[in-house]
Image (cartoon, rainbow, N blue to C red):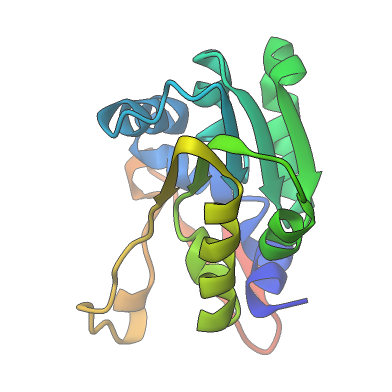
Length: 187
């Protein structure tokens, strides 16, 4: 299990959808992002790092047949419980992203999406290169590969400024500690 997987399993998985929902409906924000970049018209889509389905749900609502892949079972469980009537248009897979695309053999998609910080969870640059190369091989003619991540290289955060206060707007607070064992508390 890599560091990102351990982080999601022990801390982030159970609170991730809540933490991104602080800034408004994550499904609406994802739908707007997809529309802005004209990614919402794909007949078939592969969402790598699908999580709780922020992009899966609007893609399926737009009529796309979506393949959703993530390594975190908690987030995938949240996704499956959110799908409702859209479940017939979505196949959900718990897997390593690179392994999944590598094993996809002849499968092709109109859109392959790797959004959020997903690509930065890969263990090394060679895995990023391999994933991009594999994705290019699995796009249909005229298809799109959409990669999104935050560039935090310009941030020189130290001490407690390294933490994001995700619950402030809800009037609550969260605390987390990473030693000696990872714990989190939200009120």
